[in-house]
Length: 415
Image 1 (spheres, one colour):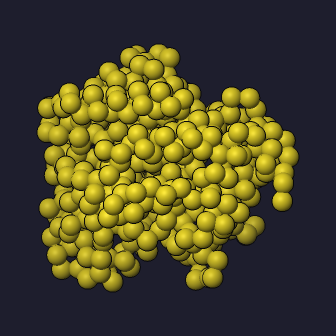
Image 2 (cartoon, one colour):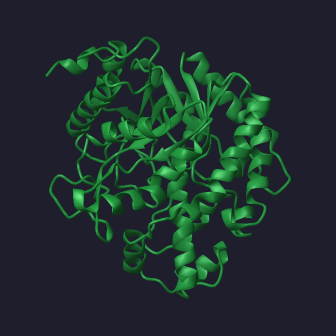
Image 3 (cartoon, rainbow, N blue to C red):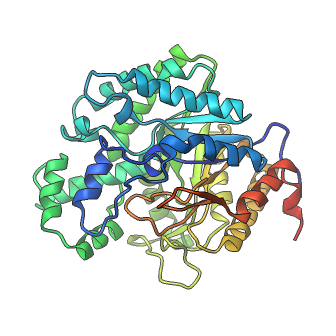
């Protein structure tokens, strides 16, 4: 097994809303309380107070990079109001990472937006891009020595939510895109209806992503102006789509709206973040649902460690940009399976790199067993977290990945 190149980044990733706890001022906090069958993030992993523990465990395991997000809704709790105390909090997180020898990779927006913007229609508000850019300017004041800055996480997944809102409005489920309109619909929905709606989210088109592309380009311009030394990019949810030969045209059509329009929009970025977990087939009617199977993960996704190689190869072919694997992992309660999945995913990554893909690092999702957008059952973490005491218990997978990092991939050649 070829070693990874010198300077290759090895680490793990988290997101603020999923780990900090009590993000009371986000759209997701409100949504958790109004949707039947949706669990609450609550205290989450209490990483708002315990981030130093998380970083220490990561560094002591032998990993050298930590990706985390800062929360727009905390920094700008009301429109036009900036919390200097919260800026200082996130600056302390950066300083702590650097003190542990960790390269900080900072995400400016990981899915959640402030409640004040959500109440005006969220990303469908006329001034959403302008308000995001205002926030980016403020956030940049604490990012001077952060080498990697991510503008938006998985804009294609956010576009799917926009598509779902539009579909619900056109179908008469609610009258507006605001949280109040969503609450009106949720009040009469059953848990089964909500789960069915989630399973059948509409496939986004390129048009649904235009606001996110505009936000990314505007934020990139600001960051280039204020942080000339930072590498700026965004991360894409790479679905690793495939199809039988007779469905290749349909594959291209579906993939363009779900992925390729965002890869094209990365032109001019310093890097692109690849986020891959599983693969999915496209048929004549579009996406083919994963059938129930004993090997499916806790999210219902197929067990496909080859998805990472597929995603990297496609992203490299589309963009030619340096790649940072910003998320890859598996939802499972079996840590031996997590190790097996990650080993095979990394072997596939090496194969893609041997064929020319310029990959600069691998960040596992997730560092912690955290809140997974409405549910606690899917466990992706390298570290277990007791939800009552918040005690962190590293899993064998953390030590294993640390050993891989210290050997720069040499361990992958062993059985």
